[in-house]
Structure formats: C-alpha cells, structure tokens
View 1 (cartoon, rainbow, N blue to C red):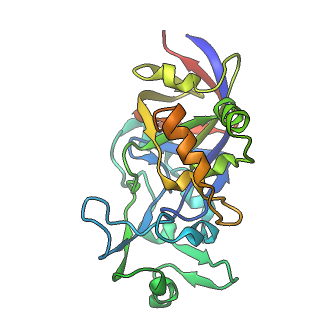
View 2 (tube, helix red, strand yellow; view 1 turned 180 degrees about the horizontal axis):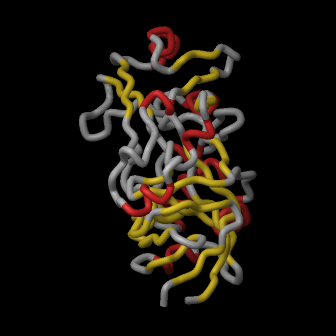
Length: 261
C-alpha cells in the first residue's frame, strides 16, 4: 500500500441540506459518519422518488446552522471496542436518539429545537406542500454513505471557470489533499479500496453526479449557474466520488490516505 494523500478536513451535516460542521474526529460506520444527516425534512409537494425539501427548492437552507446539543456524545461511541467488535450493529454502539438532539439557528438568529412544532412552522412558508421531520441514525443520504472531494479538483474548477468557489458548495464528508496528483484524481480511484487512518477502509464506488446545489454559496445562498453548466459540459456532470464503508472505525483530521494495491 502507498500513501496518496491526507484528510484536509472532515465534515458532517446534522440536518440534510443545512449548513454542516467540521469535526476533528468522528466514528465512521457502514451507514456513514456518525451524526451525518440524521435529520431531514420532506415535503408533500416533492416527487416520491426524492421527497426531501432541500436548498434546491429553498436556497436559504444552507444558512440554517444545525448543531447537536450534546456534540461530544455524537462523535464516537463510548464503548468503542464493542462498536468495532460488532460491525453493522448501531445499538448499543450508538447513543440513544436523545443524545442526537439538535437545535437549529436560522439566518435571522432565532433558535429552535428541531423537534418543536415551531421549527416547521418557521420554514413552512418556503414549501408549497406540507412539511414533515424525519430522523434516523443511519444517515439520510442521496446515494452512498460517504462522499469525497479533493482540493486539487476545487483548484482546477476555479482555474477553468474563473469563479470564486467555496469547497463547501460540494458538501462532501472528506475533503482530501492529494500528495502528487492533479484535479479529478479521485475519478481514477473508482473501483479501488483506500484506507483512511488506522482502521477505516473504503471502496470508491462511483463518481458523484451534481445538481443545482453546487451553485449555492454557503455563506450568502446566492447562486452561480455557470458552475453547474461548466461541470456538465466539461466533466460530464461529475465532481468528487461516492464511497462505501468496508471497515468501520474512527478517523481524524490529517489522517493519511493509502491505496490498497
């Protein structure tokens, strides 16, 4: 095995489509990063195949900051050895639902318990349909449990488009700094296994197809359609990759990434 890069930063998103949070350490299960997208909001006006009410419909979702009330309890299991010895078993390895309690701070500075009726009332005017809150410990992702995107790909897109692009527009879990590779190197890893840190093993499954979300600035909610048009025209609509988790465990910011050859 040979080292190919390191984790530049690690991100999770407590509520699907809302602002994420950087973490220095996190437990990665077969379902994804602990605490990642454990809440989501559906709308009756959305199609059945994708019922979620997201920033694609309401750009200002990215300005809502969701955070765990007991953040430390959501980073890794208290009984780490039990979690490693009993793969794919969420409980008792994971905390209870109460440990994942979330508050949401709106762009206007108001704070709501996400389970309170007042929270959905506050955002109900942003959807034509009825909204409903969903919770699961297994992560409400669009496709695969882990996403990866490199700083080199970000720089290439900046050069190609002449746009000021924020890496967080791509909403990945793992932002990677490759050692000696150009942009879109992650595409070459599809079908290969990589190790992250001392324990976690991933299989890179496929490239990540992109939508309007990458055009939304995470600090202002303003959109720049030129970016998606460019990715569609020059990169077949893909940036970054999806990964499946083959071996669970903790990862830390700065962990080395090696390829299983």
